[in-house]
Image (cartoon, rainbow over all chains, first blue to last red; front, side, top):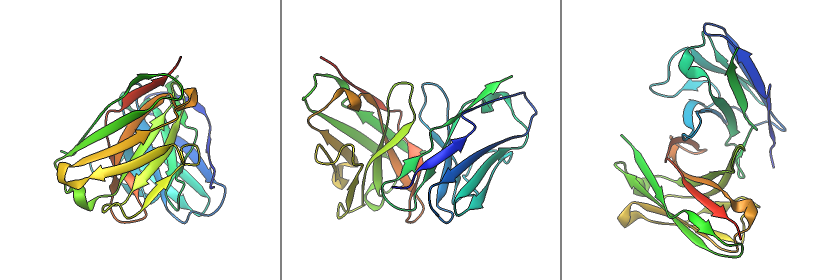
Length: 107
Length: 120
């Protein structure tokens, strides 16, 4: 099975900061990677698919990059509503797996 | 707006069974593969199972294989998860999720989840 590892596990930042989260796959997944945002008590929401494609309705301050085994989610200028937990997920082959999550906290 | 509404969760004893349902609207459910994903309390997301649009293909995580069965009724826009031989490790919020685009599939819409608690 393909393992997904996110770093860091927690990041503290302030409104207006630029933040990047890394996701590494244990083997190449081409660009079959998605990023989700989850707020407490809510379902996950899709932000990015195919490593860099922005889901409709998602603000342009979110961007994704990478291919193969290393991927990055970047938020260019943090807004108050962005403080949440972020998950990467590969969908290259079954079983699909998620990263362990990165909690974005207010500094 | 796509809506996915799960139901059927609850408290069950170890070794027991539950059947989860997910009612979908208003999209072409019969043309969309569907999935179940779970999240244990305070933990991350775990993919559980996927089913193709016509039920020809079904996939399961190793942790549930042989105990859980995914199915669907396209005439009723409904997805199901039959869960047997439940253990405390199956305690989680269970989400149904629609696939986006073409294969391979990411999950573009999620339901609000239904809580399954396995405890004696």
